Image 1 (spheres, helix red, strand yellow):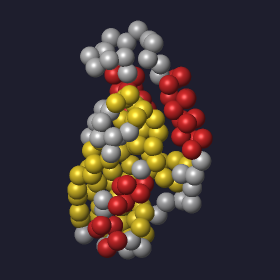
Image 2: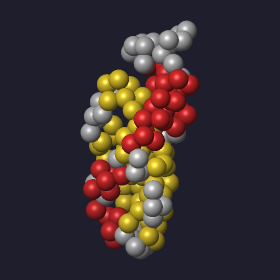
Image 3: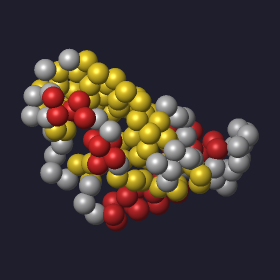
Image 4: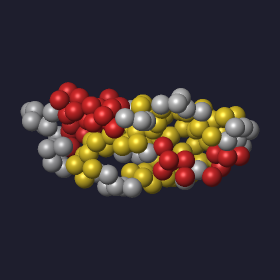
Length: 138
């Protein structure tokens, strides 16, 4: 089976947000697959996706603190068309990545006990975010 759909994640402030449940809730086809892969691709250049710790909110706060220190707004950026957070958001998006490939087993994502999907929102007001989800398997 192959299936593809566009998902929408609700608007969030800048930061690292656990979105695993929101993603899975929009993928009813997932339950039909005993073995397969889910590929997620974000359709934006100012937000990213990553897989990491799903239990402690401290981890997400530390990610945000590190990202803001590593890619500061108060830098001599040339590209500032949409504000001070514009170019830093593009760099953070590239650092985190635009896509994830995740295994599917017995109708569920086969993630580790402490793993979850993060939306890495790099804009102060990025709006709703769109993903393309592609599933294949049997």
